[in-house]
Picture 1 (cartoon, rainbow, N blue to C red):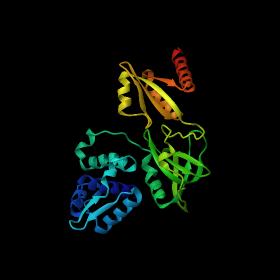
Picture 2 (cartoon, rainbow, N blue to C red):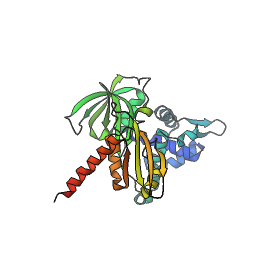
Picture 3 (cartoon, rainbow, N blue to C red):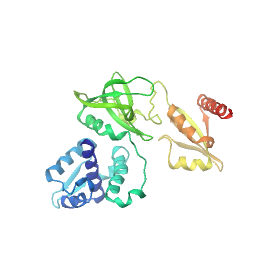
Picture 4 (spheres, rainbow, N blue to C red):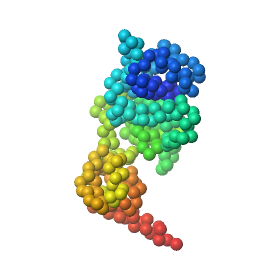
Length: 297
């Protein structure tokens, strides 16, 4: 039920956003073309309940022009900026359009994120209502355990959803490792000095490592690979500091965590760590270990 409501909210936001301004009658005409409708229009009371829920959950305001009775997204330009609004539009807008265009389903392929199907909506609801969640969790390195956490925020990385929350300390939980999850009746409040947007600011991926300091890292990419790095920067701090016909050097201010190391390895022999020396030596040792593995007969 929660998942169905979530999809209805996204459909409604996407429909109004793409239309610019639209009446409830026109919304229902589009709604009846969607498989979620079951052939039934959206009742007026339900529509306004959805408006309230959308504002509380996503901070997206659906306003009405009292003279034309047309609905529109207030400050729609914010939808083009980063954060949850842009993700919602980029991800679910396409999904809703596919659902409306059944003949195109086999011609549009995208990555699946299975970890978000079971628990994501419940976690978002708990964050919205300020309730702790109790979860049974099985990590790859320890026995199954039960935690009651304060869900601070969620993050997606490489097709996996994670929830960052507080129990005895701030921890990161992969949703695909959760066995069961229940929303408790225990209330919590987000700490005023905690900013989810800046938590991973100096990180690549989902590894935080609070005892590691961010530092300058320089990577040299082959000229052909550099084009891809320019188009899709590895990190928001990326700066191109040297360029010629053979290579380009990119500089970052980042924590060289395991996630970042793995990303560099994905680029194979098209990239070289120039600085700092300790990180360069770490990558060298990994390369030597790989060479030893491949040299075995």
